[in-house]
Image (cartoon, rainbow, N blue to C red):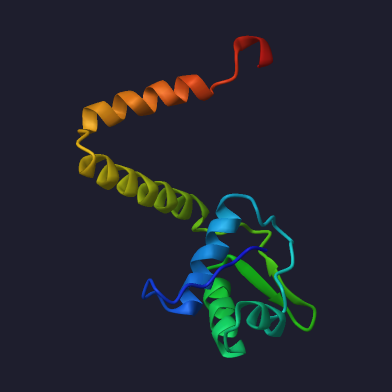
Length: 131
């Protein structure tokens, strides 16, 4: 599980963990039933206090993203996160917002970006023979 903590963006470390785990689950990189690293192991890897990881895991459990199994660990929920669709949408919206902000700084308007997105989408589709 690839999680990175940055101190420069002003987001609390526990929230960075929550957001990144939600992203990993929503994107399918963490599958249902997959075990998350133990609290102490992840805390050591991220160089944060174990209480920070414990808080993140509690938030994820409350959101239905993970479930604790008594003494065996913390696992991605089989029930699927009720936030999965919303989380995917949030991720895409954040990326669209960043794209639009950068495009505007470079002098492109929304219509040009829309046309470019359609062109790139068409270019990325597999040829009919591969379907």
